[in-house]
Image 1 (cartoon, protein in one colour):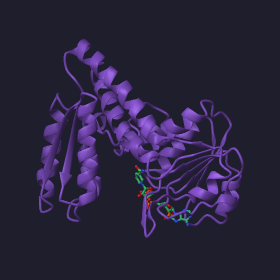
Image 2 (spheres, rainbow, N blue to C red; image 1 turned 180 degrees about the vertical axis):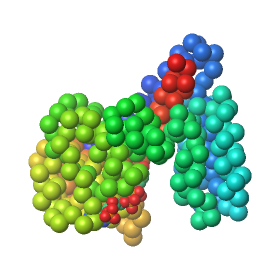
Image 3 (cartoon, helix red, strand yellow; image 1 turned 135 degrees about the vertical axis):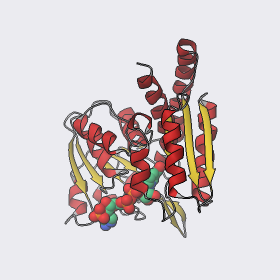
Image 4 (spheres, rainbow, N blue to C red; image 1 turned 60 degrees about the vertical axis):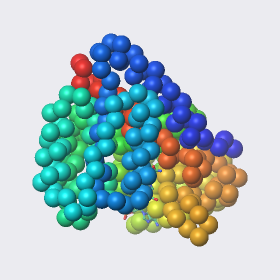
Length: 281
Ligand code: NAP
């Protein structure tokens, strides 16, 4: 079984981006800029943002974090986004989720100009992705896609089963694999026989939020299994896939942690560089 090393893949991607940023600087005399807005003091969000900033600096991006207390008015945040939309030194804008209840998440997402939407959540980017046009792609499914392609460059005709249909993970994952000519089944909480669906898959992507839902006897030999889940349990952090059992059958499997997680941040940096390049045309 191939243990898919997300940390290594993310480090390689960052190294490629670092070289690309040097080239872009030589060509345009400026570097891509990423601005992250962090509202409130939730610990996981603070850790994510700190890591985003650290890696953005590592690849040579201009990185900025704007912090607000969780009492900030929605209007203040929207005005700041409008200002960043017009700022030519900012290539990508990300508002760290979740947001305090009094701030309308969708309004925030839709205020970010689609060309700077590095999360790929704006309806314009969602629509472009589903139509097969150029767009920012949400970072976690993009990371999963790149890991799958490392194992199997030609996905033509492969049967992919995605467990979970969230806008963040399952749906964009479906679009990416469809574009690669996979036959895609997307499953959810009302799916009648999840085991049967998974047993047909050449590729399984699990993005559910239920610890170790996907069992060893759900996976046929030669299946690539990507585990997006991050679940806190008494055993520590586990994924949505029963790692020990599935590793006996699968062709390749991502660990949790150290699989999809590191690729998510690397893909955010990639999206920032892509937004910058599109803005220079
Ligand atoms: P979400 O928005 O809660 O969506 C979960 C999906 O799973 C829903 O579509 C739900 O179906 C489906 N589901 C629930 N129970 C199911 C069952 N028994 N069988 C089949 N499907 C079922 O979750 P998310 O935001 O996509 O996140 C999923 C997991 O990924 C979480 O553990 C999260 O922490 C993790 N995550 C990891 C990263 C990373 O960087 N590694 C990034 C983001 C999220 P319905 O639509 O029918 O309710």
